[in-house]
Image 1: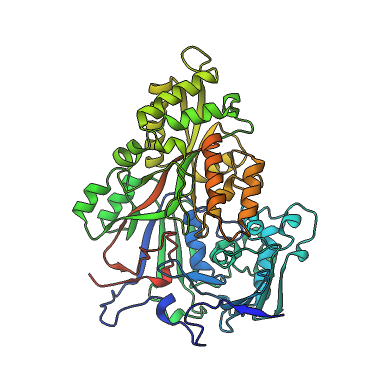
Image 2: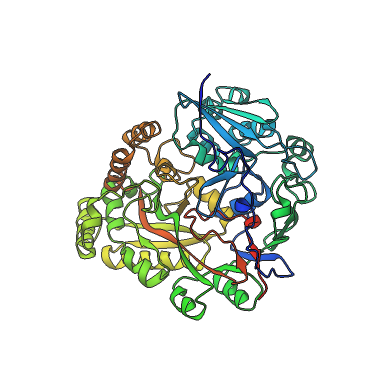
Length: 538
């Protein structure tokens, strides 16, 4: 078999990258004596299990506890993790990763290619029912779809370990961005012996075995968790932060109060307060473009009958004045959204969809016309529905403003319902809602990470929208050398059928103490690793 090398930059010379992927501390830095990084999280983590975790904050913790084939640097580029390099076959169907020989688990056992094989098979195993099983299918790993469907055994998955330091992945079709997908938590290795010994309790601090820069040493449900440096981590000598503490603070205003008191080093900025805080704390308040979207999803499967009519869905979308939400409510540099895919996505050209070119007055008029055509409004049937969102001050404010717009412009009655994060995920995942808040942060920097969500097989297609043309276009895009016209057509179909209401594209609004250095402000995915941070003396 002949190969073409796709080596990580700077490995071409045969040398190892050094501090670029651990804390890169300037020689003249005056490091703080206490290297503890404390930050606020809103909700309890869904899991510490890499094949089960979902949600942004859960993934942040898992990236500290476990290490996959590749990590990301401060600009979002791949850098070595457990894998040093990879090669791709001429037909782009076989990826061969070379693993480092100094990677260890926290119990001292070596990290092997077999640990990845076990984890990837586990991710597609129907019995585990991983919420991210579909991600392995998106990766086009051979036989993943059949295994998830229960048609083949997990041993048929296209991943193998010829030896301890070689991982071979066989794809079912070429996927140009495959290597971008292996920094995702679902692809991280898992310790088979610990899972078999402790079952579902293997992620408890006293039972967990992990291979990342940190170990979980404490977890008090809905209160706090602590992770401390893993002395077995291969790059621990270049890690500066000794301890990472997360505090569960459900209220954003309280989080800001505790930040001001010096109790946390990082917290989210409450909606509408960024301009004031930026003036007060010019070196600590950040508004960073982020590869995320915010949307409302219609339950077209078993929601209200009205939601089966695209005209109703369009009307509700058109009536949302996105600029009011971004500029008057949130005030944190968010971008009004008329496409599902953010403009910050690599190599994505934002297509012009018709309703984005209208004035808001024109959209409002069209919304009334569409709703009337569908038989709802002042001269038709009353439209009423429930809107579900997870508990958060900013989510609540967006919900209130949107519902007022629908009431005032269209006469629609909306009942707001909020739930704690885990309950919300379950409710939404089971389609027990009319309309629900949705948000997605890219698992990798390519438009398919967003558009695949609205394909029929997607595990996060919570409204169960299905369009054969969209499915076909997204399938074609996986092996296309020019995805621009394909993605543009998908976005136009979505604008016509409106299964979701794009509201805005994210800006990360955070307060970050000036003592914390190394934050990846230029990484639009905002994938950060505690091992890359350090604290300087005040």
